[in-house]
Image 1 (tube, rainbow, N blue to C red):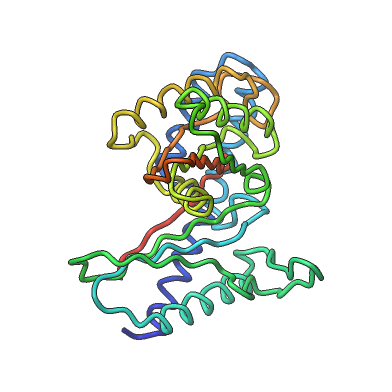
Image 2 (tube, rainbow, N blue to C red):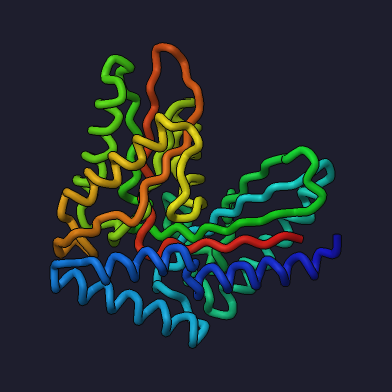
Length: 278
């Protein structure tokens, strides 16, 4: 695999992610605007959609917070990980240099900015081996700080059951209020361990709006949560209204008998993501 070609492909992937909102998200926003009864909320949704169209037309970032870039790399039997890592870093640096990305990455204690969105473990890259795959598949998820800062993790008492899980998730969104820039896509991770649940909650944001968890128990939970969260009345950007979330996506893993990890990771209305195959 040619590193320069891969780096250019990844640069284009980043560009597409930050300037072109996915069709499923835009459609959900249009439906929310058309069905919204609160006039202030309807106006805000209309402004959001105008912004989406302008960003696409002018090839400029949808939001000034271009976020932390999270890459998901899926591959088959052969992978030159060093080459892929280097290509990702080059693409991120180029995107920052061309003002597609705001320099967001800093040392967590000194707050010194790297000025190119790279650093220790930055950008974030997850690798997944898929048997039989004869190509490289890369998905990038720009994650803004406003929504990321409202993420929550609960190590629940298993005795709380499904009702306790539901209440924890709804309460998390209620406490977040307008901070994650709703209407959000709510990513939920249930099970595994504390770190696995958080990973699943973010990975859930990669799913298309309208998709369902294949397990009926979780699919039914997604539907109930969607209804309860929108009944909170937080509305677009927290001004009130019928649409607080566009979707709820639950990903799951089996867990220890004495444990019940539940993670919530909201994504702002600018639910950006892009995928490419090499």
